[in-house]
Image (cartoon, rainbow, N blue to C red; front, side, top):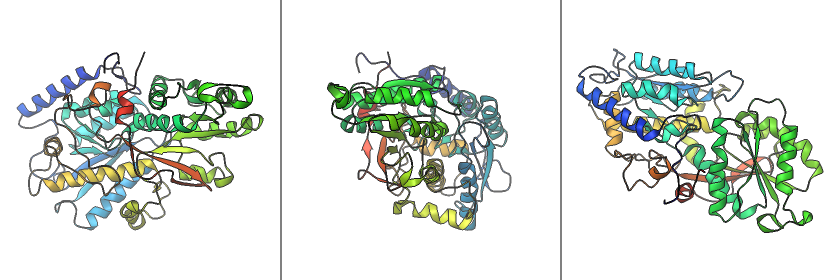
Length: 449
């Protein structure tokens, strides 16, 4: 890795992560020294006092930016389902939910409430404000299982147990695929600290595939239209077309535009659909989270702007039989709840996160169920299969071990660097390629100037 600099920032982080890891390790040591506290609850009560195991799931809802109401809604449906079957090891599962409102103050309040309620873990959650929610969790020794992967801290905190590779893998994997099929590539991304990381990740995939870096178009992440950005994106994506007499990576290949604006991607595509009529044909591509099957349907399906788009995801397509168990839970316990969509990557992540949590608790047998014991069993190398939705998950106790290939680029807690490639055909998301693509080496090639 000579000549490469570790990617240290979260998409919203300001801390040096090795220092934070050391501080967190010190907090855990202090917890061990105190018989009562730091989220460690005697017996199998999880702090509830009634024999139940208490956890929390949080996500933003009702905001002007990204919303994930399906995650806490599904968590509650999961609890109803698991409790109807006798609970976990005979203990009722109690799920508390919290709205982080897409701001740091609310995220911190959610974390402090989790500490006050003595939850065993925070499971299957979404928040962009890791610098607000991780310090309370780290101070109390509460594990964060299956976050959505929108912050770099989720891949550095020793109390984090991510089930996917977050935005880093999606964009690196997308770049790797586009290097093969695209001419000039233009990225449209938020003009924010978070957005500043996205070109690095996309370019790591492009350059691994022998392609030059993408053009970078910045945009407000709360705009009501994106006409000027659409024109800039199209200018960049068609600059090297054969019709323009270009050469090199763009010559003779269709250009590609990659909008990475989260919930505002649909707004961008409305503007882009109008602007693209005046340009040579280009292809669009994006990461899961910027678009899903619901949005494709709402935008016109096969006649909409997403037709033919490449999309990278963490998991198999929603129609895959491996999701049948999750769908049964939804049908039985949340039928008619329009917040919960089986095609939503947030809901899917929550299902996998609760699968991890359930397996961890079951492995304890009749022993104590607490934040400490759950964290301990995960750190002791418990292997957790997810029915083929991910590789078997297993987290390292030694986060910065030399055998951890992603620690050197700032992702020491990432244990699943696999992505899937999907494509929109006749209005439906289908697998473009069988199986998973491992982007570990691609991420290791990532560089920051």
